[in-house]
Structure formats: structure tokens, C-alpha cells
Image 1 (tube, rainbow, N blue to C red):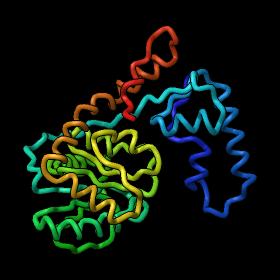
Image 2 (spheres, rainbow, N blue to C red; image 1 turned 60 degrees about the horizontal axis):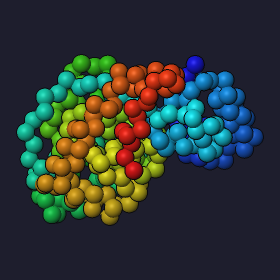
Image 3 (spheres, rainbow, N blue to C red; image 1 turned 120 degrees about the vertical axis):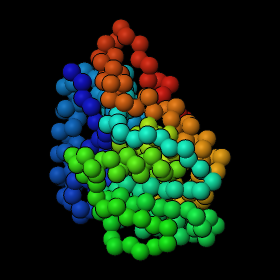
Image 4 (cartoon, rainbow, N blue to C red; image 1 turned 120 degrees about the horizontal axis):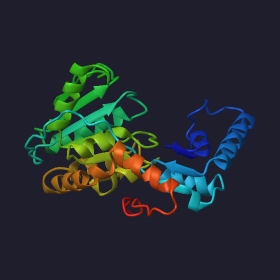
Amino acid sequence: MAMYLDMTTHQAIEHRMFTPKDSLSGLDESRVRAADRAFRRVDVICASTPWAARSVVEEHGVPSAKVHAVGIGARPLDASRQIRDFSTPKYLFVGTRWERKNGPTVLAAFRRLREEHPSATLDIVGEHPDLKEPGVSTHGFLARDNAEHQRKLADLYGRATCLVLPGAFEAAGIVFIEASHQGIPSICGDVGGAADLVGSGGVAVPPGDVSALHAAMRAMVGTPGERMGLAASKRADLFTWPSVARRILESLNSEQPSDNAGMWEA
């Protein structure tokens, strides 16, 4: 029997995914004990990223031979890749929670960048405040079960030159896989497992650091951004649900060699 996870109980507690910061330590301890019992009952633990896999081994004490980082997949968007001009940057923000995904930081960094590149644009998707900024277009929340919304999202991905989502914490992030399938680089936060998914197809920055984000956004302009987009595109085939399912099945069969050792970049 296999278990699949994107973060461990230790990581969820550390990043306060269960309760506010003043939660009872006894409750946290009971959650850890429950996770440890679950880990002992399964044959294999499959994690979405090496970040999560390390926690299973180092914080929960599971033998490393039992733990495999197998990635995540993304539902393909019906988008046709357009010819992109990376010298005219078109940034895309896709996040349901404006503050937690560091939307204000993105906006501040974009203002700086637009002083250098007046033709730069920023499309914002998700729950966001009323924004009236030069170069910024807002699109609200686009539901996954709404065909018209998904066509609009696909069009935005098709036109973008970079996904910008430096969230305060991201266990994994399907949006980064969606971006790689569209051949565009990503800027993610360096807290959590998103950087494992982005790899050479983008940059990870400290969440909330406007200067670091501005530098990363500027680095995506022109040829460097185009190269990272190509790198992201090359990694995309690793992150489909059929590929993930195959790696999970291989992890259950010790006689089959696993092909996931080379998919994660140092």
C-alpha cells in the first residue's frame, strides 16, 4: 500500500496550516503521533517534492528506502502557445489568496520594473482587491469547473512570458506545472516545495522581499527569460498525472527501477 502527500504533519504545523500560532502543543503532538502511525502502516510513501520527502525521513524517522519523491501533475489547459516577445514582459499572477500569495509584493516589484520597461504588463487572476494601476489588468476568480473561465485562463497563460507567484508558503503548486506546460518560466517563493517543481525553469525568491522579486522579474526579460521558458518546457513532460502514477507504481515494485532520481535538479 502506498501513501501520497505534498507535505508532512511536521511541515503543516511549522507553517501553521492547521491552527493559529497560539495552538496547543499537545494537539500538535497528537497529530504527529497519528502521522507516524500512518507511515508505519504503509509500504511506500510517495511525496510530491524532495522537500516533503526529506521531512518524512528526517522529522518522522521513516527509512529513506521507503520514501520516493514522485512529483505532481496538472490538468492540461486548452491553450495554443503564442509567439512570445520576451523583450516585452507580460507577467501573470494566479492566486486565490491575495495576501498569502504576496500579491502586494508582486505589485510593488512590478511598479519598479515598469519604470525600466514601460510596456510591461501584469495580469492578475484570483481574489484580489480593486486595483487601478498602469499596466495591470485584473480578471477575478476563474473557476476550474467553468469552461469559459478556463478558456480565459488558458489565453492568459498563452500570452504570458512569466508566472509570478512568490507565496509566503507553497507545499507544491500546480500553477507552476501549468506554466511549464505553456513554456513559460516561473518565479516562486523559496519556502516549501515549489522551488523543487520549478527547477531550472525559473527562480525562487524570499517571500515578501520586493528587491529580490524585482531583480528576478527583471532577469526574466529578453533572452534569459526565453531560455528559462525553454527549460521549463523541457521539464513539463515529467509532471503529468500519468507520469506520476507510473512512478508511484514503480515505487511499489522493488524489482522495477525508478526513473525519478534524475528529475530533481540540485
